[in-house]
Length: 560
Image (tube, rainbow, N blue to C red; front, side, top):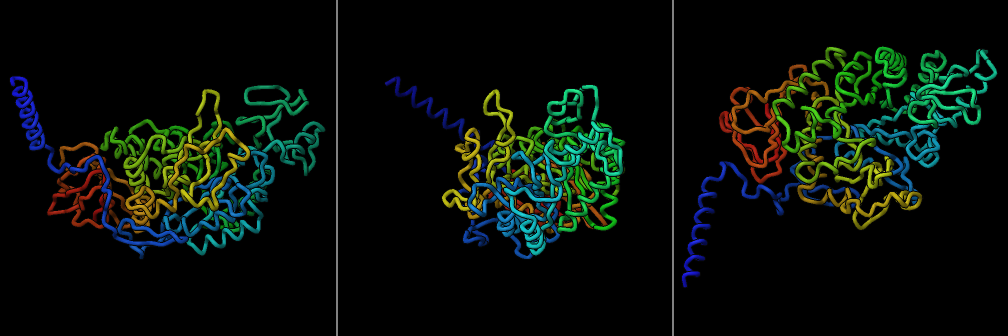
């Protein structure tokens, strides 16, 4: 009997503690804090390629015409139109409606020129298309169809080096050995030496001649100081611009002259300035994988933009997007870091803009660090920053892919695995890893494809579409001045970020709530009067009453 009394008393005490805990629960805490609504209201319906689904409340009057989000595609892995297991240009063309539906403005195609490697970064012919991907006619058809869908085509340009199999390199060797210095000589097109040094390799079986190849012995470096080389590179760019290319992404811009920023910025400016004489409006983006100070120094060139690696998945500082999305960093420091970097960029080049991204083909997939709600938060933050943000294909469905799955594995191919379109319908899905590279198994890949995610309520895919649509509604975001307004919020909560984007008299204020709870904050210092857009993960619809803003957990509001 005594035992029963003790049990009863313990149970009563436990119940009392639970009641007290519930009574003292933080104000605004969502009772479904750790879960997304399993049955959110159906608010709109879209159809595409036979798929139909319910999504966020989208505005059908907003298109991608004025948008600026770019979508990076590894053609080999994207969509197979001819059933050979390899993605192709016609496959990209077939999925233009998909990209338009997502709100994409520009497609960045990783190398599409002939190359002996799967990745294409060692080119053998700068004036043609890799036969695995199609023909020049296929490319021209793609650019024409893309233009009809208000989508620009940007292509990868690899001017630091070519392939050792390029005819130019072979001719350069023979001219160098024979000391041919005639008007057609290519002896000086590459960097030769009779003394071996760091970064130099022996030419095939000739142990008396060495060439520079900083990336690999299969990738000999061009001598970009040679006037004929420079003119040839301008000709290449104009050739592709004439075929409808609107933008160029330049690979490895630090290495034209090994980590010599003053020379490299001059060379980049020369290329751009020569091309825009005949093709005004063509834009140029550079890959300068380094710290933010080095990246900002390259803005002294006339290039339009450079990738912000410091904010990507590789970033570890205050400006790291993933750390912010997970609520690990100070929102105030994040905003200050972005404002400072944007200011330096504009001082170096008033016409420049940033290129933020979460991950790309040289990094492990974002899904390694971000899933579910964290993936949504990272998207809201990245795609509502100024400039022209870049999305890696499959990011919108949390596609998987990491480099190392074993101690001896250094293959980037796992970071470029096939796009998944449907869980059941495998039409168009590339299967080249299983055919040619058994070590690149996709057994652990996501099963739910892009078309499946489109018809799933509040999926990551639909969140991406909603955020991009909001961005496309305010095209001035691209050139906006970023001002951190986090310190102007009156709140006891950390990880609430507020910033102003303004350009030519237009402005909006964006507030992100990275907390896992609903909050109420005083925004009297922001000088705004209404909510114009929102992206909510919680059930709470944001409310603005006077100067008090209620915003749901891990959600975003846009105010004017």
